[in-house]
Each structure stands twice: as C-alpha cells, then as structure tokens.
Length: 396
Image (cartoon, rainbow, N blue to C red; front, side):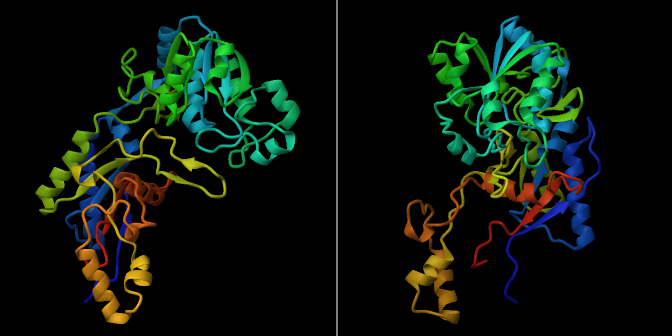
C-alpha cells in the first residue's frame, strides 16, 4: 500500500534527570521503551533530539549568583559598568543581573526600545510615532521615558521591567541609572567599561564599542566561560543560554555535547542496527506573530548534532511544479511526472525557480524548532523527541 504519512514528531517521556546521570543510556532506553510500548519501528535517518536542559542537568553545569559576582569583580573591579541590551526575562536574565549587580558598585543599565532583541516590548512602536520619538537616534533617560509613556507592563508576564530590573540591582546594594537607546555607543557617555548582554548581535556591538574607544568590553559569553571557584561554565557561550534554576542558581548551556550525540547514535546502532541522527536542541527559531516575540534566547538552536544533520534542505516546490512545469497533467500522470522530477533533481537547487518558497534554513534550526514546539517548556515531561520521516519526499 502507498505510504500516506509524512513527518511525525513524538515527545518521549523520560525520568527526571539529575547531576551525574548517564544521559546517553537514559535517552536510548527511553526511546526504545517508547518504541516497544507504541509499536514504533525505528528507521535509518530517524532523528532523536534531546533538549539542552537535561543534558546540562546531567552534566551538573550550574553556577551561583556569587560565582557570577566574583567573575564580574575580576573583570571590572570597582569601575562603573555599562550593562547594555539585556533581554527582558525573569527566567533568562534576571538571575544573571542579580549576580552582575552583586559584583558591581554602580551600573548604568541601557535597554533597547521599543523592544528587546527577541521582541519583548517596553512600549508599542505606534506610541513612538505618536510621540515623535525615533528609536534609532533618540536616547531617553528613565525620567523622560516615564514622562512620555508612563508605566508599562509586559503583555504576557505583567511585569514592568524597568522597575523590576532597577529594584533587583538596588537590592544588591548597587547604584543604578537606567537609560534607553539603540546605539551601543551611547553608553560611552556614561562609562568606558561595558558588558554587552545582547545575544545574536553581540559581535557587532563589541566591535563598535572598541572602535569608539571603550576601555573594557565583555559579553555575557565571556562571563563564566571558565570555572569560578569550582562552578559550572561554558567556554563558548558563558552565561548565554542560561536559565534560572533557583533564586540563587543558574543552569548553564551544556558543554562538551558532541560525545553525547555520537554516543546516542552509536548505542542505537548497536541495539537496533539503524543509523539514526541525533541532536541537542534549545530554543526553536520561530516568531510569535501575535506577541511579536522571537523564540531564540539561546545563542544557537543546536549546540551539537551528528554529521547527517549538517546543511540545509534541498527541495523543490510541489505546487510550483504542478502549476508550471506540469500544468497540462493531472491524476496519475501528474504524480508520476513530479515523482520523476524529484528523483532527478540536482544536488544544489540554490537560486532555481523550482525551489522558490522552500525554506533555506539549516536542518538543525528547522528540526530544532519542530522539537521545541513538540516538547514545549512546561510540564509535558518529554525532553526527548523522536522525529520520523523528516528526510522523506513525495517519492518515498
């Protein structure tokens, strides 16, 4: 019988994972038990994806607010620190800011507006138009912002982040001044020592600041990039990708992930005879069209994956073929013609009209988004995702 099912994404339940657990064994055992329970056949090129959170937990990759504070003091001493472009998040940044403030004597906090880097709004952009404010050129003091826009609460969290971040800093015994601007060089009017907290634009921000005469420039990726008093760390991403664990602890983005994905792949091959692909995933790379929030607070979607997930899709657009190349065909003739076309498509369709409208994103970004949506961030208890049929096409 002709196959009628395409890609299937399944959340796999797993035990609660603790520090020191064998993450490779847990993942493989969980997938095989689920497959047996649901009568699922494992196939070559199935994808097993594991959320970064459980990998980091198994690694015990945690650090405390005091560890962050110690690293900040080492980097900046008693200098006033310009903390610029943080995202507005209780889970992602507030705990980091607590540690930064504990390690500093005075902070100038510069927020981007009307929204942060991932789309959390301080003020609606239409209100900027009404007030005649140009966010690309106008810098606002906290007082001026309040005069123009008053007190605004985040649509989803109900938090006024200016008040929240200000109180958080002051509660650590640190003086604070808040400004709003989108040109990173504005901070140099207040201090030459800067901690860049943006995620995906951090390299440009650092470059501009150094060229403009900043003395010390670090990013969140430079904080806890090595252990502090036995803390967890991430040599590549530092605090980027971290999450709140407790009121005084963060869970860092996992490190040394390549052995994990390759270990899962090898174990599955030994136990099933099938060559699966494996990836670790964090935030998916998608944007909420209503809340305008871009779901990518992690520095990358996937910190590690097996070699078969390298690259981008190489696909043709079926509706384009049906409406153009084979507009005179229908039924079985149309299906056979399109199937033959797919079987003979080139290895690189970049720039070809018959691939227009397909998604030229990396496979790990696409599959990671699918996995993030499948597992969610709440209480589903499925930190492992089994994706089947992703590499199938109309002919398979």
